[in-house]
Image (cartoon, rainbow, N blue to C red):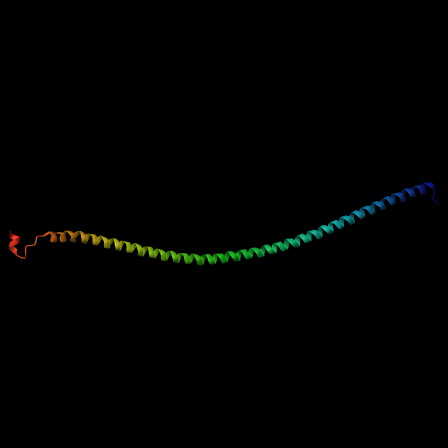
Length: 141
């Protein structure tokens, strides 16, 4: 049936088949390991993406809160600005009144000095005039 040559060929084929089977098992093991590693990497990436999405949502909420706080500060600043402007207008009005009063006082003092300057020589002349006893003859002499 089979001769030695055929048996030898069959043994060679059988040994090659065993080698291929062993290589196939090794490759299958390596593929399974690679698939497991890829699966773990996918799981890790999914976790990272979930955390990233949470951080983005927190960032959006924080940004909205900051924008709201800025708007609140703007409104408060506008109110304080209006109050300061009113105070400045009041102070300016008071300064204008004080300036007006200063000029009125200066005019009053000037008028008083002018009047005193005119009246004092007149009064001085009256005081230094000789008294004649009420008669005109004394004045003519």
